[in-house]
Length: 164
Image (cartoon, rainbow, N blue to C red; front, side, top):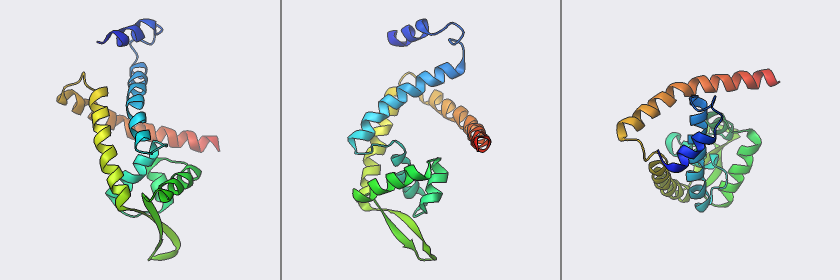
């Protein structure tokens, strides 16, 4: 354990030190710091913009609403992000040939290049943030977090529904 990790544990309330959420929150903060600078250096001021580019690369053209649902991004934030991507030439809106009332968001070559560069940078950031774990431990962590993700999504949906 690094000295600053130990200090953080020492200053944490004793009741938190053995709680998983505390460690997850600390790890999240570390990862956020590691990726934020890399995203900004590529001109991605909103972290979910990377997710938009990756979604378009993986799934192909999609509606703004569909991308927003996949990523859990608010519709007004999607509009701002897509306006930004479009003004930078990283994505464009096109009429859906199957439904002229709907636009599809399409990844451009510039967007694909940015995605490739940022993905490489994020892998470096991940290596830095998870450097204390060997490859098997990283795979275990990824698997365990994957088990938690569907439950977290269901809880978020339930909270959103009850807030109405």
